[in-house]
Amino acid sequence: MNEPWTERWNERYSKEEFAYGKQPNNYLKEQLEKMDAGKILFPAEGEGRNAVFAAGLGWTVSAFDISTEGKKKAMLLAAANKVTIDYRVGELPALDYKNEEFDAIALIYAHFPAAVKSVYHKTLDNYLRKGGIVIFEAFSKKHMDYLARNEKIGGPKDSGMLFSTDEIKSDFANYEIIELAEKEIELNEGLFHNGRGSVIRFVGRKK
Image (cartoon, rainbow, N blue to C red; front, side, top):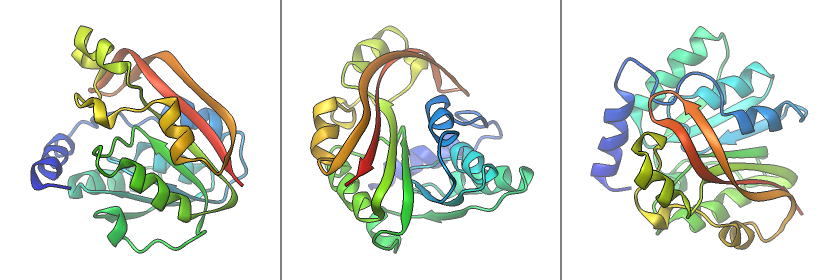
């Protein structure tokens, strides 16, 4: 990622308040509570709210982000909740995860730059065992219309970083689709996800 991109996230996460709150994403919470705990990876995990929740359910948790400030907040949150997470800082290709290492991967508002997002999805697929689960929620292409009406909903202003159901089908072609839908939802997550937006939700099992 380029330096301004990294600086942007370090600035956002350097404040005392948690940018997206301390509570887990609702869709992630709903999915994890149906599953048996195993080993899970959280890409673009920011300040750790989802990773810490999973660890509290008994998952062995790995997470990464490009932001050192995000990691600092995540480790504070983990300590406050008396759980342990393995949190790495850097770009995905350099982080040394192993093929078929994880039972689940949770992509929650993991909006990577357009040039790498499909590459990252396919790289992450290598790290998931057969039968493993991907849990995904992120803003859809239609979200630009919602953002124009309400900036407090948050999300990328670059449509190339947003998602369509067709992109998800292409990036995760070797998956049994358990759920794949574009939905309008109401978000109330910290300072930066507030209001009505359009998201893609996906749960898939690797064949």
